[in-house]
Amino acid sequence: MAAYLSALGLNCALGQGKQAVAAALFAGDTSGMRRQNGWVSEHTLTVGAVPGELPELPALPGHPPNRNNQLLLAAALEIESELRAAIKRFGVERIGVVLGTSTSGIEEASQGIGQYLKQGALPASYDYAQQELAEPANFLSDWLGLSGLCFSISTACTSGARALLSAQRLLDLGVCDAVICGGVDSLCRLTLNGFSALEAVSAERCNPFSANRNGINIGEGAALFLMTKERLSKEPTGSAVPIALLGGGATSDAHHISAPQPDGLGAQAAMRKALAAAGIQAEQVDYLNLHGTATTHNDAMESQAVQAVFPHGVACSSSKPMVGHTLGAAGALEAAFCWLTLSEFNPQQLLPPHIWDGQADPALPALKLVQPGAPLSGNRPRRLMSNSFAFGGNNISLILSEEPGEEHGATPGEPR
Image 1 (cartoon, rainbow, N blue to C red):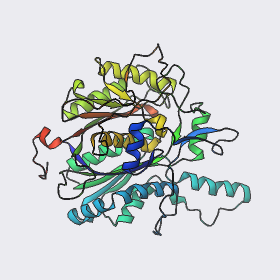
Image 2 (cartoon, rainbow, N blue to C red):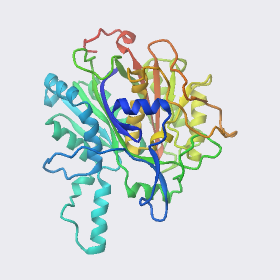
Image 3 (cartoon, rainbow, N blue to C red):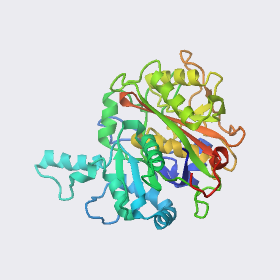
Image 4 (tube, one colour):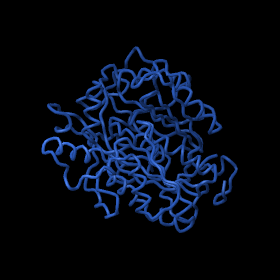
């Protein structure tokens, strides 16, 4: 059953807040991808860092400060009025929190452990809790004073997408009346050194689906949705257009600990399950946000899978050259880009462009990669798909749509 994405707060290398992110996204702005030192010894890497100052964290017992929670709080503050209105309407015990992450506060924890290794004592500020995967969800729940179901998900690079699917299921089961869901991950040395050890990181801006692609860039960010069973017609939603998660599909091919299944059968299955859950055909999808990491194996697998599911083609692009791979936040952040594409924050009705060198790999099936300035076409309601693929063969596809009430026979404002 479709679930309304009633509000959205976000930040990433494109900027902070819907207005700034949308303006940069549809312009194909890559200025947030910058070369920096200090993440990996003796290497300069291109990373996608959130620009500007982040909010100061409140003094909540049991929640030591970390940048991950700052990113999350910044996203939450953007939609605080909608969140508080939902709490007033549904009650603190009927609102869930489901967040995806892979880093939590590991950067700050690693700094503390580094001091211990050098000096034999942990800093006074060190607290193991800051690196626990549940910390983002617990922090947000405590900040809002909620008492409903609360948990984090860590399925590597599908974490944020999985959080949205889990939130939709909680609504379908009647466990919650609303769920605050999304993903958050911050830049950290552990992650960057790990991917560098796999020889998967590019020193330059990543180049998805190019013959010259040579790896990923890591980024950071947060995307936070308020998901509800009904359209919140009386509360501000952040978009004049009702937008919903129509459905999603999840699979696990378990081909390899870090490499995707070369033929992309698991990815295909996830996309087909998403189409079935949404009750639509592949021809009814107007745009696909590709996982598009610019690694040799991912792009080869994904292009084959997309061709198999969309034999007549579909407009598609990867947003990672503009924001980097935000890991546990990526699935939610790229769903947010689809949300922005359908929203009033895209007045020119553009698609997110595919930024690359234009040198197609002749070994890969050709994709209909979006050129800068290309319009969002198709008859209403338009439907957009977002792909997320992760280590261990974990695959998720989500489908978002505008005006779902008319599509599925619900009356605006009535429970579905």
